[in-house]
Image (tube, rainbow, N blue to C red; front, side):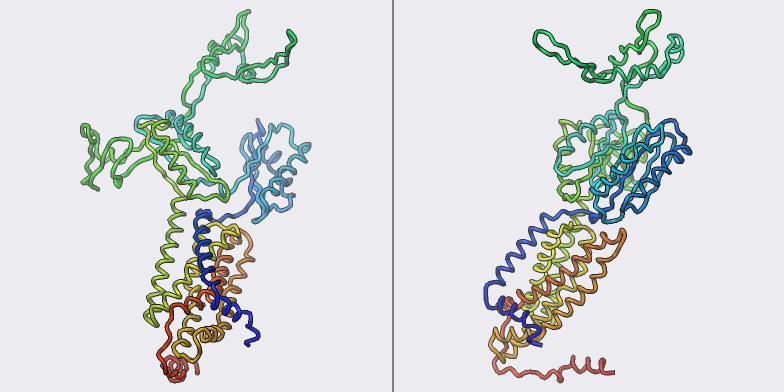
Length: 565
C-alpha cells in the first residue's frame, strides 16, 4: 500500500520540509482574489444556441399566399442545413418570419455562414414578387441588463423620446455596451396628409406623390464635367432636411404651372402616430412622487399628500398618489462575455453625468431593471457565506477538538475557493447563478479532506511517539487512501453531468466543472497546506502521554453495536 501511494507521501514531505507551502498559499490567495475581481459576473450562464430570424418581404400577398409561396418553401430549404434542429415560421400579409434554431453548442459564426450560404445559393429559386429579406441573429446577450425610464409631469411622449434619443447616443459609447433600444414615446415624423379632391383636380395619383418624394429624398453622384483643366464632381440631392423643403417639393405640372406638395397635401412636423402607451406610476407605497413635487406621508386611509414650497394639492389625495406619467424606457444590452456589473455601473454613471447637459431638470430617471446589481449581490452573498462558513467551521471544530485545529481547517476554505475560481476563469466560465450554486454546494464537502488530515495529525502529535515532522508524515500516510478515494468518488459522481444534452447541458456544465475542481483543490490543499500549517500551529501532547486503546473508546463501542448486526 505504501508503494502504491508513494507519489502522495513525497508531495506531503516536499511541502512540509521546505518553503513551498507558504509560496503556494500566497500565490493561490492572490490569484483567487484576482480571479474573483476580473471574472465577468452575470445572471445566467453563457449558453450557445445559434438562432436567427429570416424576415422576407412579399408585398401584396395575403397571409395564406405568403405561407404557401414563401414560408413553406423557405422552411424546407433551411431545414436542409447541417446542424439545424428546428425551423418554424409565422406568416402575415406581406411578410413571413422564418426562425431557424441550431443544436445547442453549434458554433455561432459557422452556423450563420451556413444560413447565409444556403439563402444566397438559392436566389434563383425564390418566388417572383419577393422584395427582399433580412437575416437577424438572436442570442441571449440581446436581453437588456439595464433599463432606465425617463418620465416627467411637464414633458409629453414626443419630447421625452427626443431626450431619450440623445441619451441613447451617449450610452452607446460605453465600453462593452451592445444593443440599445427605446421603448415607448412618439418619434419625430413629417406627415404628409393628401387631399384627395385637390389630387383629382390636378390629375395626380397618390403613387405619383410617393414617387416624387422618393426621388427627391436622395443624394448621389451624378457624373462630372471638366473645365479649366479641372474636373468637377456633380452630386444630386441633398436629402430633405425640413418640413419646409417637403412643402416646397414640386410633384407635377398642371396647365404649364408647377404643382407643389403644399398644394395637394397638409404637411406637419411633429410626433408620430400613437402605436403604444408607456407610462410609469407610483402607488401608495411611494414616499415621494418624483417629478411631480408631491411628497407622500402615511399609508392607507391616513395618506397625506403635500407639495413642499407650494400650495396643497386640490385634487383627490388617492388620485395624486397613484398618478402616472408618460415614460420612455432605454434598454441597454451588453457584449458577450463582458462583466454585467461594470456595464451597469457605467450606465448609471453616464446617466448621472447627462443630468443637466442632456437630461433637463424636469425629466426624472429611474433604473427599472439592473441585472448587474443583482448579479453582484449574489457574488457578494457567496463571499459572505464563505466568511460564515469559516466561522462555523472554527466554532464546531474548536468545540470538539481545539481552536487551533479549527483555524487550520478554516484556512483551507478560502484557499480551495481561490484555486477553484482561478480554474473557473481560465476555462472561460463566468460567475453566474449556476456557478454560485456549485460553489455553495461544495461548501460542506471541501472541508472533509482537511478535517481528516488535521485530526489524525493532532492525534499523532498528542501521542509523541515519533519526532514532530515524522509524526506528521506518518499521520498523513495513514489517511491518504481514504482522502484520495473519497475525493475521486465525488468527482466521478459529477462526471455524468458532462453528458447532459439539449438546453440543460451547457446550463449545468458550470456545476459539472466547479464541483470536481473544488474537490480536487481541497485534496491538494489537504496534502500541501494542511500539514505545513499543522506543523506551525499544533502543539504536542505532554511527555509520557499514554495511548488510548481504540477498543476502549465510547465512540468505537457505540459504532460497533450499530454496525455489527
